[in-house]
Image 1: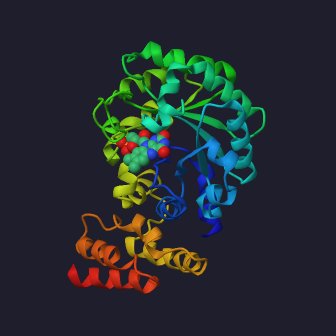
Image 2: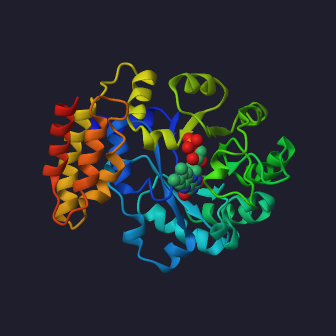
Length: 331
Ligand SMILES: Cc1cc2nc3c(=O)[nH]c(=O)nc-3n(C[C@H](O)[C@H](O)[C@H](O)COP(=O)(O)O)c2cc1C
């Protein structure tokens, strides 16, 4: 990664790639960084308990090229959150983000995630404990409401004490979470989006950094949203059609060179080689790359060649090169 790319990130905070369990692991983030020099990248949610009790290197390692990178933490025990935040700061993360948006049963039974919207005092305690031990920003990712608490006032009652405690950045998934009866997947599509509530938060608190998340899939939507808020966080579209990130960078920074899809694959090869040499399996990396050629001629051949071969014992970069070749022939 050239130093020019690495320094670009400090210039712009408008694009963020969402934390996504099982998707935004370190390989995915390295790949996304090649597509988007400026995006702020978020890890999958890691629980504070896992960091307190577990293997830091396994949970926290990342590649320097991934900066700016935020660790998303899940938890509600202030002491554990502080310990985990400190570990992340020591690893060089640029931000700690607290998950107040996940509705899964597992997370609810641990008393964290979206259910914490009903207990701002707990989030404030965690926030203060983290801020007492780290200098990097601690931010909150939340919903616009939960269950029957579907109003702007409820959102305000959640953010106000956090603002008083010093929190300056809120990433708001613009739909409520229904904590009973909907799966996490349904909770990302069934409750309707309400961007106006997020815009209102920004207009009532102009000094806050407010980032809108939820349902953004096109450049036109980004253009529509950005005048109202400070940034836009993109989840599924960035993963399923990763080249959208390159198009978005080109759209926001026409003066920056736009990498072609093949060039991105070629830039991945040295990374893949070194990861394989360290014992990683090819499919752990290439699984994140299968959407790169979405809607392009030969996309199916690319996906199929990777899917059928990358998981094999000993599979190496020749599989990726073969996938490119097969795609060219199929196109
Ligand atoms: C597979 C998957 C895993 C997710 N995991 C997390 C997570 O760990 N933490 C979190 O705050 N949100 C998580 N989300 C929610 C996303 O961060 C985001 O809020 C949501 O997908 C809406 O944005 P989008 O419409 O741009 O995808 C996940 C979403 C998906 C699709």
